Image 1 (cartoon, rainbow, N blue to C red):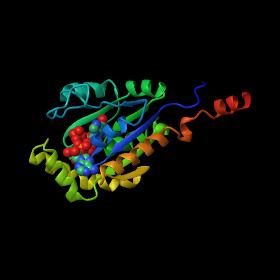
Image 2 (cartoon, rainbow, N blue to C red; image 1 turned 90 degrees about the vertical axis):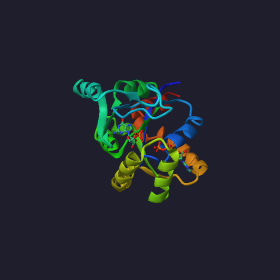
Image 3 (cartoon, rainbow, N blue to C red; image 1 turned 135 degrees about the horizontal axis):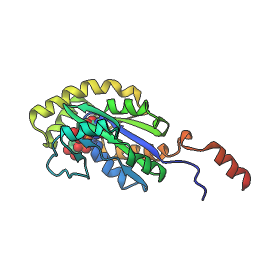
Length: 208
Ligand code: ADP
Ligand code: 5GP
């Protein structure tokens, strides 16, 4: 079949603890051709996190060398650590018609929106029904020390102000319902008009 459209980018942002990783696990069971953009970070791995799976864990010096070499599509400092998205694997996955999934913060979303890849982007802001529930989830996840949880809570109050810059808002209350909504968004993300080559569509349509 003639290739009419490219891959797409799905950006998920939202306060740490809102459920992005949990929702992504459900999404992966329900979509075929995707590529999760593994970010590079200077933060320490949490228990159970693997290098090259959850993140590429590097030193501050290595990260800054990557900045100098222009390796990142975007990068930002979040909760006092660097986080960044490498450009090369993204381009490859888009060429392979995949849905490229980013779990990045609001600064990263803003930068990708301003980049040459904007036409591929559909974005979702995910949050809990309340600040109190966010705090409960971060506490019961039990992966971070109390001071780190507090830093994430403080940051969430700023992040929530960017909610209207996103295409979709997803309140992650009931996990099953929120998962179904995210699956729908991921499916329509692949149908954005800007992913299609108009001339090619018309030529194919005329010829058949
Ligand atoms: P994030 O990736 O956004 O930091 P996680 O996916 O790690 O968040 O979720 C934070 C915690 O909240 C985890 O312990 C997870 O099991 C729990 N969680 C996620 N979604 C829900 C939900 N809808 N209801 C209750 N708990 C949830
Ligand atoms: P965590 O430390 O909880 O894994 O992530 C903290 C925050 O960093 C989250 O808001 C997450 O979306 C964001 N983040 C993860 N990777 C990237 C990235 O490559 N770029 C940017 N800008 N933010 C990221």
